[in-house]
Amino acid sequence: MKHILKILALLVAISACWIGLLQVSVIPESYTWLLPLYFIVSLGCYGILMVGVGLMQFPTCPQEALLLHQDILEAKDFLKNKGVDVGSN
Amino acid sequence: MGNEQKENSNKYSIIIPTYNERLNIALLVYLIFKHLPNVNFEIIVVDDGSPDGTQDIVKQLQSVYGEDRIPLRARPTKLGLGTAYIHGLKHASGNFVVIMDADLSHHPKYLPNFIKKQMETGADIVTGTRYVKGGGVHGWNLMRKLTSRGANVLAQTLLWPGVSDLTGSFRLYRKSVLEDVIGSCVSKGYVFQMEMIVRTTRKGYNIAEVPITFVDRVYGSSKLGGSEIVEYLKGLIYLLLTT
Image (tube, rainbow over all chains, first blue to last red):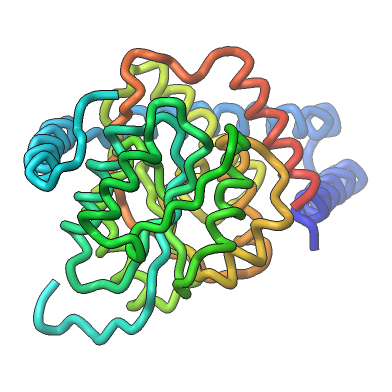
């Protein structure tokens, strides 16, 4: 099944719940009408939170640049001895 | 790597598209040979008519390592990444294919990890991820990290891709799987990499991940301007609707 259909099915299910809530009136109607808005805002906040958390925990590897530099020197040395032209680009 | 290393009768075709990578291709080939001492592999260089003489360097490398180890499968002009992989695939004699960048942002020292992970899990694809513990990126400023993270969260929410790093291009594929998927991918650039991995998820292939470190080699040039962001969003919508 195409992914978009899964998402639409999910949205339809959520909408059905919402309409059900409107009919049953367990919660005051004025509040129920605003539920989709709350849902979208919560989703947005969750997204922003995920971006923020991910940004804080963003894995960095400064030592890798140094290791790469050493690897490059080692490689140039070997290749020069074997007759490969390692002049720069 | 040690005494418990299982007999590995697989052959790995490492496809490397190049354009003006005269120096990097030599360094890369050296490092690959260094880190895969007991593995049966070939390095297929798909060069798009580089004016800087990349192909001459490849020929010099062939005389050091053997022409059968580094087949050069060049093309006359710059023809794009997707077609470069397809071209390389046609000449791949291994049963597994590795794709990686030519500019040393992908380090060959992770190749044994890819191979080990695949043998342990029997996965169809092993993809390198920069965004988990043990992985990482060097050379990105805060803005770049922010856009990367934002793009990732958006893609995860919309596509449920099943991998943590969608735009990464350091991957090991079972050759039959790559052949199956690559024909249906039409996007360009990094959206192409996203399309590849999403289509393999949709088809139910077994995907495993290994952490990799990524040292950005394009110093100082920000690859994410407004037009790239628009392309990315268009790509997301396309993948949302067609996969």
